[in-house]
Image 1 (tube, rainbow, N blue to C red):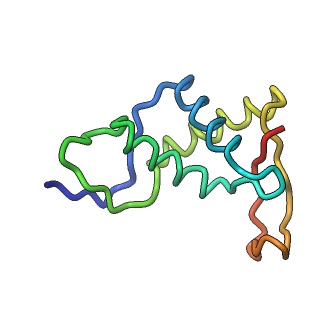
Image 2: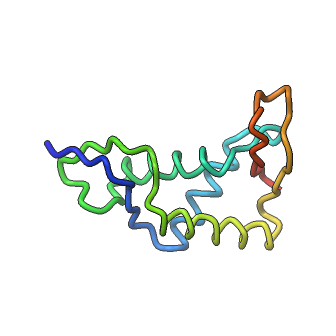
Length: 109
């Protein structure tokens, strides 16, 4: 068994990444949505489950982060989805949600 503490590199092409993002956001409550950090974490988990990560053979990933270049790809695809009115960006924080750090959230449009 291999252990990898480096950020995870996903192998999804842009269309596959787009579908994973929509699947995650559509599965969330429309008032709470998901933060960018949580979205990246969930994409990482899904990619590991799909065996769509670099060097996945017999590897246990201990990092909870996507590789920086994959975070940029997620951001680009998110902005395309916002532009197409498939995803909406909620600004600010909500004391009801416990988001004291003011992270913006993405929800289904």
